[in-house]
Length: 230
Length: 267
Image (cartoon, rainbow over all chains, first blue to last red; front, side, top):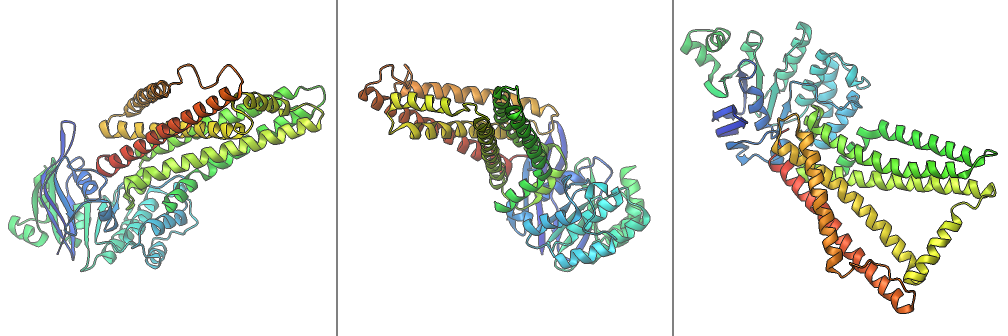
């Protein structure tokens, strides 16, 4: 089932084409790797699907409907930067999600918090960047969304925290949803990806099943990444 | 909408507490000025007047800065990721601004009344004679039956005018963000939009006064029964048209901002 479909999608900022003629389908039951170096257009594409950016041209459909405010209820997006208000403790962020996202699962969040060694009384501004990333993943994955968009979830994260984050992401993936992870840390991601989407200067250059890509190019995804972006 | 209003309140909880502490400290100072020996109650009155001006300024700046930060800082992502339409988001910000203004002015009014009560208790005249004088002037101008209606209407119109200014400021930020989303000087364009729209509002207001034949002013120079009726009618006309005009600008600001946020603004 197609959860997200983009058709000839363009997004420009002045003369810069951040997303350039992108047509992709995101299907349920898969973990996608949206791969590319910094500035390749990964974040712009994710923000377009999350409904934070508006296309310059082309269309995006979520669950077969054109993107709108309603589609935000089906898409769980985790930005790469901390996105909390200064006043917030973890319990305030949780209340915000409870208030605005009907699919937020408090039990699942409690479970993820315990696994991430976080507690509700912690003030978010005092969290380290690794703890903040873990919180963002916990809040996002505690939603029962159809599509999860995780923008660089492993950026600047130490090895121990990486394992916790990857476990939370894999634990949240199911046959009913799709998970799209953007990253340039291919070595860590490679084994969990079902499909890979390579994006270069806003254009999709490779979009196929990860196993097929390895067979077709006779390379690991990490090697293929180095070849494409070298 | 209620949840968004709750969120707006939570965001400002500390700030509102600080504002309350500052106003309360100023009020204590005003009472001290009024009650201490060899002091003039004028200082207390000045503090209360500054309090009113402070409330107007603080609320305006707060509404503008909070909205601007939701675009400028990454925290805005959290708000705009929620499945709320642009209309709901901007509506909650405008409504909260209006509520904040009402609460602030009510508090300033309460503090002024307290200061005045202390002044009267100390044997000063307080503000009573001035209010009496104003009441008598209005009685002569519009007739005693219309005095309170005129005062209430005038205060309501000032509130609407201020609320309209806040709404236009919010829309100016939205416009700046829509047209120049990635330009770090979009705040400057927002200020420019605000000045331009404010000039248009004032011009339209002036034209309306002419349109209803009030080029010579609302108040008549003579104090006959007929002139009182005429002044009351003139004022009612001005109040209704002014009210409609400011409501129009508030509604237009809401619609423009809501539509742009829903369909155009990149976060």
